[in-house]
Image (cartoon, rainbow, N blue to C red; front, side):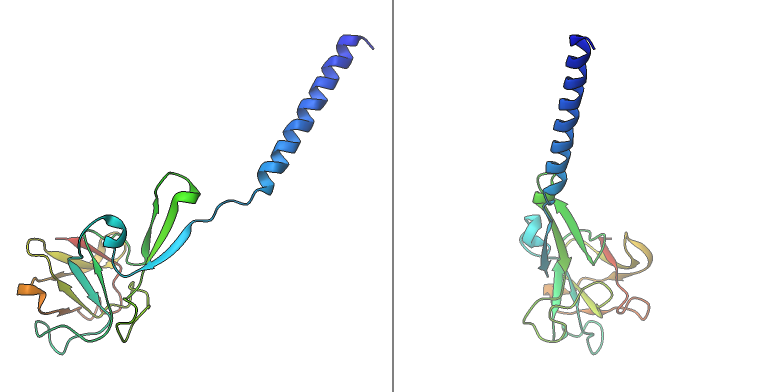
Length: 172
């Protein structure tokens, strides 16, 4: 065997061993998991001052006559999925946060429950925007317009199709 053949075989063997060691090192390191936060207000991570659409856990006696007791969640802007959203702040798993939408804690009935498919009424508190609540995620399927009441004073019951079957909401 020539010196050149030995050198080539040794170089290939050393390179293969180094590659195997790097693979083992890389796969042995656990992937950083995204964190999960339960929120009842998407302004907590969207840099807005307050939500315009309130989704309520309970119905009102009749639409336009006050706001129901119990828990609520408030949103600003379009909500593609009432289950929540995932945001990657730096493009890596370590900067990813899963926001799960729940009704506000400590506010009575419905507290901590998921917003998706659990809302019975809504209150449009925006002075300039209309809102629609949709049956499906992604602003699809049956929908209902939520009217604005002066001073955010009253809620609208979701219709029979949407009550406890809400999945998304959108500026109208």
